[in-house]
Amino acid sequence: MSEQAIGVFDSGLGGLTAVKEMVKVLPQENIIYFGDTARVPYGSRSEETIRQYAAQDAAFLLSKNVKMIIAACGTVSSVATELKDTLPVPFTGVVIPTATAAVRATRNGKVGIIGTSATVRSCSYKNEILRQNEKITVYQQDCPLFVNFVENGFISEKDPLVQLLVERYLCDLKKNGIDTLILGCTHFPIIAEAISDYLGKNVRLIDSGKETALYAANILNNHGLLNHSETIGSCSYYVSDTVEGFMHTAEIFLGKSVHDEVKHINIEKVALRLQG
Ligand code: DGL
Image (cartoon, rainbow, N blue to C red; front, side):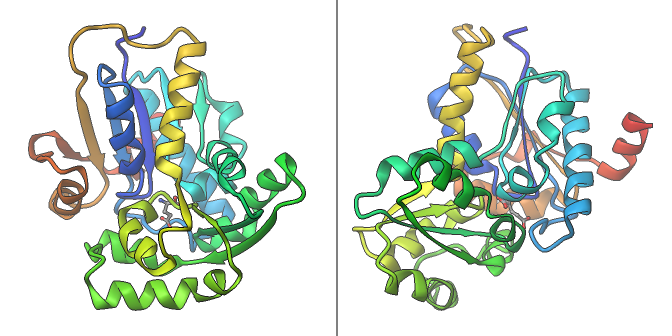
């Protein structure tokens, strides 16, 4: 059981922010990643569509016999909240670990949240923060175009287009004097440098991918599912659009070649077969 892989999914590249951390924290674990690059972005779609996509993504990972599923996607975690109860394996999304880290981090009690439109509309992070500490003031901002920027490789903090978009989306949060910002979409840590350059070093950025990886490690431990093998685990990646499109930015972000590990699947066909 413990040598089975951990299944991680996102609408595209964003969930790699969790994979990158997972590999650091639990290097012996095998990971199977699915990025639904043919249907990204999820964050501007209806709740019904997001739920349907999330169920299909999880079904694909279960067919790979994974021992745990991580929805490394703020949108799925915020909207498809029923998914957890339908799965035969442990599951986590990103909202609880990330909100918990933000509550711990803030000193002045002003926390900003950025995410996709669906995530901000759901108030998932906001509700979880207030559940943990009702004295915190929360400011939310949706930043849907960040996802398209990341998917298309516009990620450098030196790129004037990236700087302009960051300023446009974050100027109100900056004015409000937040000291902590939740990067509530897992795509956003990929442009964390640009965000930090704009907000200044005093604003602490909370990386949803990273916090979730740490939280998932705890869940695996509690369920006795950690892989105690001495060998380094493998990562394989599946995408629903072209392998090349994913590979380029994935390699910049992960800092290593993933050339031989990325495969294409037709998620709709696969899901139809698996879900009947
Ligand atoms: N990484 C996803 C999230 O965390 C991106 C959402 C999207 O596809 O719009 O919300």
